Image (cartoon, rainbow, N blue to C red; front, side, top):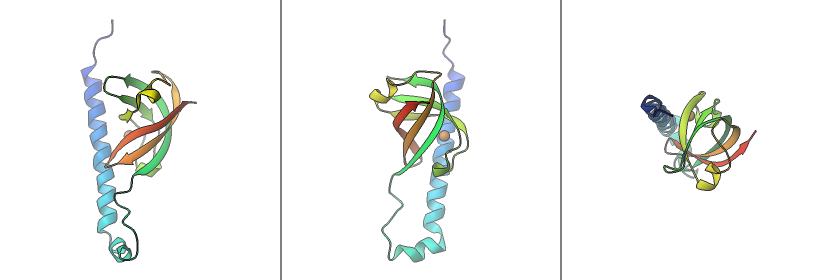
Length: 123
Ligand SMILES: [Cu+2]
């Protein structure tokens, strides 16, 4: 028997929200910086471009219905994230490649403070 762990689910949502806030904070800090405004005149707008990042961690949950994978991941410098456990969107083909408990390396697309796994492989 596997009891449904609502507490863990809530914790994942809270961490996901924390990531989003951090991402937006970084974006607005860049947009409001005096150097950013000065550079804006002769540079393409970088703010809306999707960033990519990569990391390593352990799969703690896979939800094929929701299309998400929960990763206990190490720090991700590109996103400004410390180590944490959080859920990411992922395509079905990626969810089929790994299982709970696997140690993995992964690539992310970062957009609007949330992340989608674009590649994943067992370590
Ligand atoms: Cu995270």
